[in-house]
Image (cartoon, rainbow, N blue to C red; front, side):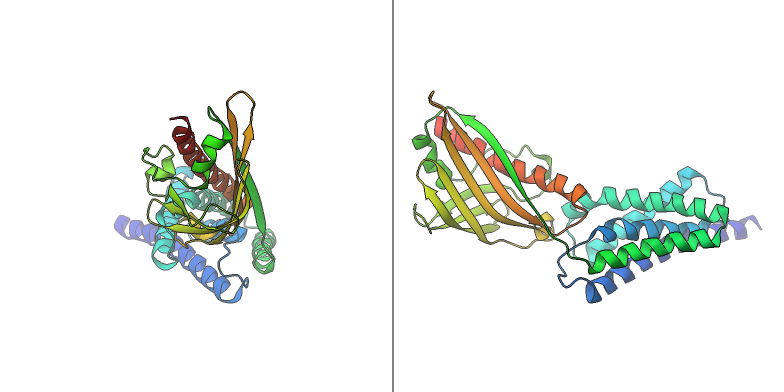
Length: 306
């Protein structure tokens, strides 16, 4: 009898996990097929509403098992791991991208599970239906809404050299030999390694080469010698990692002579996000962009001061 009860419990736990993931994959598949016209956009609801509904679905199956909080958390984490694995195999997401998104997935599945436990304890059908209806309505509205977010990141360093000495290394530089110091670069995210230029003039083609061989094609749109190098990104690689979810649209280096033998070098980058919510992903995008800036500008500093 004990074995039968144990198997029933295990069956309900497994059903809650598997059906929650089946729900998520089905909704995301339908949303991709019939939702927002820009299939490259990953919306707020995919990382917040769907995980919350996954947690609620799981606890509907677990409602009579009297699970403790630690057990609900543990089983929700297992559900999140399965969701991430499915995203890797069926949605072609990269490992680093999934690492970045995992706090959202785990956090909202667990939150949904505890919301579900509270809902089903009260057994108030009107309240339960209303809450789930609100979450579904948010998902539908979010799916058909326009999504657009652009940002600019700016960083500065002081170099013990004149603008004339720095300028040549800003326009193009040889391979960066220094080891990576940013943790995402260390675990495999592409980092800037070198730049080439067809000519040192306005309209010239510039290429930024990354560590895995990816190349960003650029066109110089402002060329104020020793002062301002601005370039538009005309083509960039698509990758299952974060680069598949962000467009770098423009870059700029500004040189300001401080009048004491030093120069302030400013690096600016403009980008457009294709993943939401922005309050979460902008933190990552800014961090990655700043570390790209500093890797390049520190290299320019070493070349200019040597």
